[in-house]
Length: 202
Length: 241
Image (cartoon, rainbow over the protein chains, first blue to last red):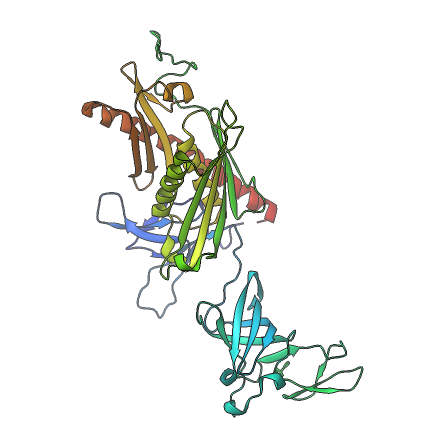
């Protein structure tokens, strides 16, 4: 439904959206010379509705951005700096492996592998970190993506107060309650287990 | 044999510049990221696209662009006699390569590095022009999957029999021994991306036949665009937008 009087047009790949001198190409659009002339035009690369975004008033380039929103919902992909929710799969002496399940608020279509290194678990005393006292297999952690990493896994970090284990099960099988940034307690057996706990709430 | 009778009608009753009836359907394979069925007359092909997804063969991984793979097969029941080896034979390998190169030139692969896009095309019923129908079906399936492309690649074949350029040959006309020109075309960018011909054709006729095939491509592009817009409107409507 058109909002604010904007007429939204449905376009297919290859359709001309405007001149590159008047418009900037956003998502779903690209710039190429029009046929045999040298004048660059903005073309659509997806099937969907075209939207025009007004530029921020302080930017030097005052051209509006045109983008095409496709109808197929694409699964989220982790980027450097995005906050992710991951489930720990393996804990070793200096690293912990985790399967990334959500990026931001969107769940992923296929799982991505992330690795948390010993020096990225917390911000202080990073060489004295014991991985087994920070994570256990099966824990749900909130982490931030440091970088795309190597071919096998993304590099994750829990080195902030609000990052770390969000939910974990005790050896008895019950969901534990966090009592400090280092400890969680099982409500059934009253056993205290050590984790790098995330600070939840304001 | 007379392929164009004195009244100017072909074997199936078409005029020389007339294309066969087109029919397209999007989303036939629900599990695939994008899929389409494309019919040109009696030729019917189905295309399914998976991707972009993680590269399975790490040795082929490219850091700056997506890997495009394509597989062309013919169903056992697609031709008159039951085929023994539907894939792996030379013709299928060649057509797979041709389709892959055509689609790869059109997909904006630099936007999806370190990933893989798989295009599977299968011919369900073959009556000439399977190559063209496959490229058209692949274009629709890629557009359905939301993979960014420069333009819609359309393809059409043309031939020259009884001194007449003919558009969109069927199996009988194709196996007559005359030339068969297949053209892949980007309609909005006005560029030819595929040009194949078998048999021989005099140099002064080649241009005419190729132009005829290009006109056919433009007509197919109009139809494909309509189908895509209609399909998107339906999806938007169902989503309540």
